[in-house]
Length: 373
Image (cartoon, rainbow, N blue to C red; front, side):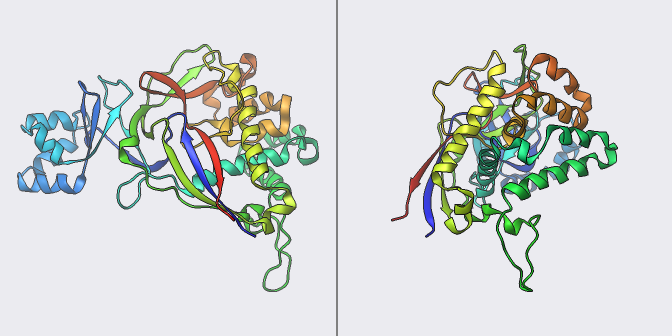
């Protein structure tokens, strides 16, 4: 019998789900005194340009990469009330970037312009936690550290292919375990996603989130020496203490043989959160202990490597060296070969600012409420 649940995510820090769209300072107006950002409604804006005979002027302005829309409005004597009429919505800027109006990476929105979190984003985060729970204490059986290192001995041209093959091999052994036949009566290969037990988990997109729960937050990396990086980009985020609701169905036909049920799911989320806390976050002096373990996960963009990998689950004490090698070979310009000497890899804490406080990106509390009779 299919089991149905309501899933409630309560954001503990800013959460960013990107839509792939970035807006420049030519598409929003920033008021320094109030730290407010006016996101322009483009349909209303271009109608306004046409009515005021400003289309050509705007084209010339758009070719200038230095001036902001706010300054252009001021030059054209567009008053505050007119700007308000052209505004789709207003968000507060928590980046304190008064001297530099940067690109803003926008949050995903539905056809009505309301932010939401797709079920695929939540399922992806749950998938990592489930995979971590299933491979825990099985590293020798699944994949040796030496074989992992051997992938780096092949040429750079083939290295990514070998790493992908290794990841697929683990997935085949742990997740793709359903015994299924195709229409011709032949067994479906376990490299095919149709054989994944995760077919037994269905998650809806979230209910729409009110735009008043959006804010502009900066991307900030903190080193182990607690030095913050320069703010390089801004993200539109859901603010802390926002409840986001989904519906989830679990089908025991697919899940029961792997031992996955709601209790396993909750324990896997908690265990994966503790693993990140104890093996990575705790290495940073600026990170504060949150007390007892929580049923929490890190969701969305900017949460960092550790929230999207099971390397620590697979390799335990050997993970530091392996992660350092992996990142060095993928991003050698960042000198990840130095991570081992600092006792943590990657050696940057992915953070943001909201209301003057520093937060880890994307931290959410998860609660499940059974809806089945």
